[in-house]
Structure formats: C-alpha cells, structure tokens
Image 1 (cartoon, rainbow, N blue to C red):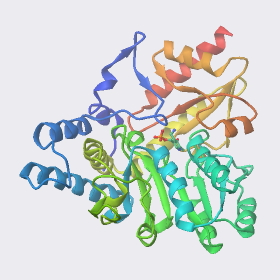
Image 2: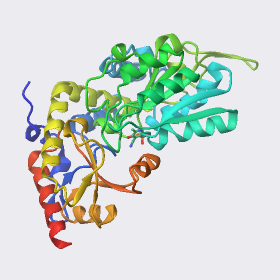
Image 3: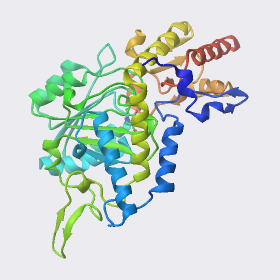
Image 4: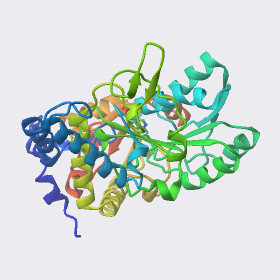
Length: 404
Ligand code: PMP
C-alpha cells in the first residue's frame, strides 16, 4: 500500500489547530502520540452502545461488552504475535515494570540479581532498585558501547556471573538507538536468566513478533501508539504466566472464595483485578487496526526518511546530535544540544513557532548525564509528520542561530 502522511493527517483533527499563530507541529511523539478519529470514535461507540461491566453479569449488554473486550485482546495479542492468554492489560509501561518487580521475587523465591543498562527510562530502573533494596539481592547496570547500544561484552560477562532477570530497553527514548533484543534474549536464556523488554518506543514504530524474539516478558503503552492513555500491555510467555502469582487481589480475578482461601480465575484474567479499563482496551484495539491498515513497514520507512532529512539539515557547528552520526540508527528520535543555549530555552523558542518538542533529562537522567550533559532537546517523529514540518523546524533552528 502506498503511504501518504497528508492523507493520514486528515484522520487527526488536532492538526487543524493553530498554536502561537502557526499551524501546530507535533514533534513530541515519544512522550505521547496524537489520536486518530477512528480511535476516539471506537471509544464513543463503546460508551454509546455497549457500556457495561465485563466478565461478570449475565445480561445481554454485559455479554456484548465482554465480547468487545475479549475480541480486542485477541487483536492486540496478534499485533505482537502473542496468544491472547499471554496479554495482561496494565495502565502503562511503568505499571507493567512495577508489577514484574513485585511478581518475580515471588516466582523465583530467592534474592534476585537483576541486570539492566545505563540506557533505561526511570521506569525500568527505579522499581528494580527498590525491590533489591527491600528484599535483598543486587542490581547491576551495564554500560553503552561506542555505537550507543548496550555493551554486549559487559552484558555477557554479567550474565555469566549469574543473573536472574535481565531487563533492557529496545529503543532508547533519548537516542533512538535500538538494542539487538533477539541476540540479547538468546544470551540471557543461554545463561539461565529471564529476559524483560521495555518496548515502549519500539512497538508503536516497527513490526515486532514475540515468537521471533522469544522474550519472557515485554511491556508497552497504548498512548504512544495512537491509543488512549491509561492502557498498556504486559506480555508474559505462556510457560511462565501459569506459574506467576497475581500481584493484585480482589474482584474479577477469582473463581471461588471462602473465608479461608480462594481459587484464581484462568489466565490472563487473574492478573486483572477489579473493573478493567474497557474503553482503553477498545481504543487500543482501534489503534492496532489503524496501524495495521497503514502498515508498520511504511512507518519505519517514513520515519527513516524524516530523520535523514532532519539530520542532514542541522548545522553541525551550532547543534550537536547525541548518539550515532548515521541517521538510520536513530529510530524516529533525535536528541541534541545547542551551543550556548539551554535546552529549555530552545524548546521555548520552538514553541513560539508552534513546534512542540521535549527538553530536559527525558526520564532517563543517568543516560543523559552519561552523554555529558544534564538536559537535551528531543525531536520525536511519527507517521503523520511531514518533510515540510521538518523544514519548518530547520528554519526555526536557523533563525535561532542568527539571533545568537
Ligand atoms: N520506557 C520507555 C523507553 C519510555 O520511553 C517510556 C515513556 N517515555 C516509558 C518507559 C514509560 O512509559 P509510560 O509513561 O507510558 O508508563
């Protein structure tokens, strides 16, 4: 299918918006993405025509809402090549990682050695750090290589020394560099470790199949892939999900309860205590339909062209791009520093031109500090961004240079 971002943009009413006198340019997609009409309409349709609690009542409306909920899970699971019983709904990536830090000590039954990397978002560092500090065990942080991906020699050494859980980001939210998760997974399993992928920045942007990579766990957020906020996925491999003790207890996750004991619901329902976020699940399924319709390969290619155009247009004497020189290694994300101007001031100047970017430590302070700075400016792109928008951004950067 041919892909045209201008056709795509028609589905996103927000792009009609004027900000500070200019047409809105949204370059903050790693933080969250805009929502197409189809996602918002699917949520409205659920509320207007099917709203009911799910998996509980025996009335017709509840049966219809339950069908919608179950079918949505099937669609979302198939998007990543998973079985439906391997997909647990969470509120976001952060909740998925916190749940794992809660569940895995109980599963493994001893003090854990957890290995992670300097490239992680705070969400993939802090839950593990608190877990080992409260329950005992060790957290080991592996560094980066000269190509701005995880140092594989160091990683393998740590795995050889003994590791229970290896947890690594797929695509860095700061640099856009991509870790070789398939190879890392193979190494982790060779050395007897479980492997968690933080896929928050990859699932929205590229084809991914859990059967090909074979991670034990994987987490991502709906809001970064055109879906609503408040819904995320925790994928757990079938052979493990049967053995994991639910980390939250309450209604909807038990079959029978006496004053002494309980039996749990089937997987994955036993991991979704309380009334679930039905609108979120329905909205995420609509986002998956939308992305499938466009084709993930088209998105990969489009983002690569935009990043190339952007990096070629940046003035090297004025702007330092963090990470690899090759644009093909930045998966839709370019972070940079501007000579003599604080990142927040750069972001504010771009904002005055109607261009939304992110500045700061990007919830990955150890990584940003390892780059030798304490803040950066980040441009993060998606399917609806255009070459014309990149040109407007480059013009604003030129204007900034002339002002300084
Ligand atoms: N990991 C990565 C790599 C991210 O980019 C983000 C979001 N910036 C998160 C985790 C956390 O995602 P959420 O805020 O949706 O929980």
